[in-house]
Length: 283
Image (tube, one colour):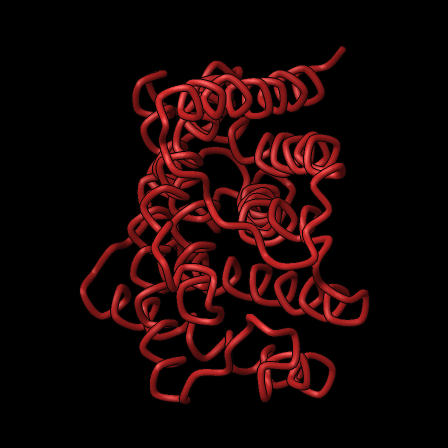
């Protein structure tokens, strides 16, 4: 079994069984459950959680295998990355675009998600470190500002593309619990999401090592599995056209955002480019 498969399966097991045990402990202590949308099929929850854990494991493992640093550094960076992209980001969207948290439950959902994600990060941090030097991000104020502004633009472009398919499910309470907030609220939400994405991605970028193109692909895959697949594979309450459109939309968001982050925060340095050409490949 190669390192990728071993780390992927181990992290998926840590996520699933860590969540199972953590939920049992919270239930025994009387901790409130996170609300489920109408139409959720409770019998499907366990197998779909397995599927979600596998998506996370196989999607984030390529990124984990490209981080160079101490195990503590990699665990901390991946814990923050997973908590923000899987838990905090998802629940911010639920808060803004639905009525599920109308009676509370936002904090409960975050707390329930925390332990399985941190457990998965601990397994990812045990991955073999890559060869090669770190990529050395350039975190100047102007580059960070443009990176912060880039995600809302990317979101709007792909959101408008998916709009003709999904908009009817949000308008006029079409599903009974989804909301279509005002455009100002949407933009404010994307600025907040962009800020927390940057906070979670920068520590990962600082540890990235090896060749640029595989590192870029690994970041895009990790973003898509954490932001998109982990939640989407469990979303039995979404009609298939809506689920398909959101999947394609988020894939476009994550791939484009990863490219933007590399272009802005990990630009090709002249010395590195010259070395790459001499070595027989291009960056």
